[in-house]
Amino acid sequence: MRGSADAPEWSAAFDQRADQRFTTLFRVARVVTDGGAQHLCLIRNIGAGGLMLETYAPFEMGIAVRVEPKGCEPVSGRICWVKERNAGVAFDAPIDVGAYLNHNQPLGAEGMPRGPRLTVGRRARLRVGVMWHIVELIDLSQKGAKIQSDLPMEMEAAVELMVERLPPLSGRVRWMKEDRVGIEFSSAIALADLAEWARTLPGEAAPGPG
Image 1: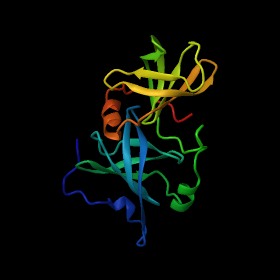
Image 2: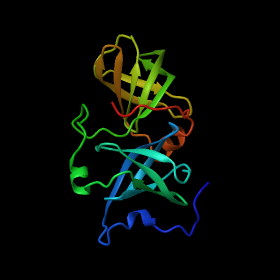
Image 3: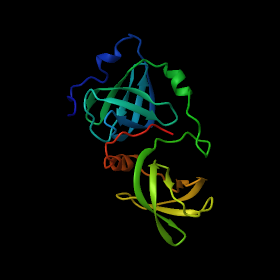
């Protein structure tokens, strides 16, 4: 259930230091619950003891979560308060915020921090040229997808991906490795739309980034 509308902006879990400071962030993150459900959220601010999320789906008080921000390592904690479309996460252990934000994950193929990817594991349709093919959709982000297919394809080939409950996604092949293919979309999926779509994914244990 959602928390009380009178919940404080930060719970007492964050009051361990009188000089606690928070850094405004506005960074997209994948949040995975201890039950394996995946959510896309927006980190509004972060401090040594926790962070505040703008959410697109309800969270239960007290559940364990793993937060995977764009360009940063995952951090674990628990939902400590919920208020309307915001939720607070208290970290399992304090972090050095400056060091954490400066210790980025490896960059993606385009030299930019890779956005959070939803682990999917379902079939989709891919158009290559004039032909449509059934492929396995491995993961999906706002800006691209990874599929599994033994179709012959060329780098930079124009393709169109059809995923159930999403509009057609046009893009180009950006990388290939064995039977894995990376697609970059021509236009990013809106965060709210992808976050809503993520609610249709089964709540099974989802692996971390990789």
